Length: 83
Image 1 (cartoon, rainbow, N blue to C red):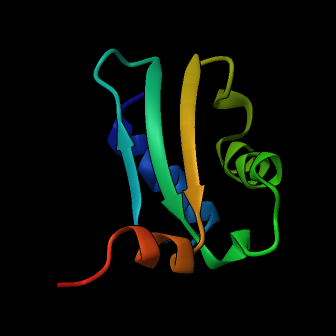
Image 2 (cartoon, rainbow, N blue to C red):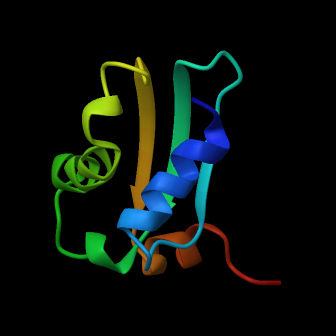
């Protein structure tokens, strides 16, 4: 799999997520940043489970490892203020 394919799968199953950034150049180890309002009120493990659900059986198969950073839009804005 490519980083672009993983990002597309996440966006397909989580259309409200923006941005979705995925990196990884060996085809099996990736890192991703996913920002979604759907994460509001969820613990980190619950946020990760939502992303894993979007990737389905590819996790542990085509995708050997995925390091996730999951943020709400408010958390993202606080980290990266405009200006």
